[in-house]
Image (cartoon, rainbow, N blue to C red; front, side, top):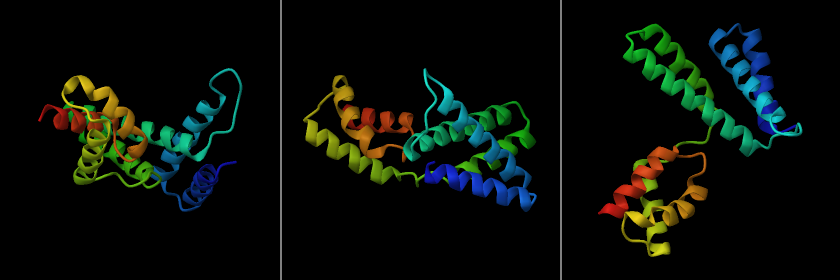
Length: 151
């Protein structure tokens, strides 16, 4: 079993003992999502830590989007609950890149590929994505690349 999954299970047990409802429900949801991913496809398999991080990233993004939807509908209490769950999930994710760090990686990729103009976005994204995997959201990366190529 992966180290991250073991940590999630151990933290779930600890949060249940501490009667931390938000943490307990969030970790249960995260482990359920990991289990669903493990049994999806043709054969059941054990996920690696990187694959588990992708699942947790996806779940954190769902929480962020749900919080925005609740806020837009005037349901502040539900929005706060979603943000609390997102905060629990983000504790397990790698630190996000700052805008300056992301811009530096994009500049480096543009120089390496010799790309110019918006039509070269795919080439730059192929170079940038492996470097920022899990540390920056895809839409944020695409926006940075688009801005760099259009300037």
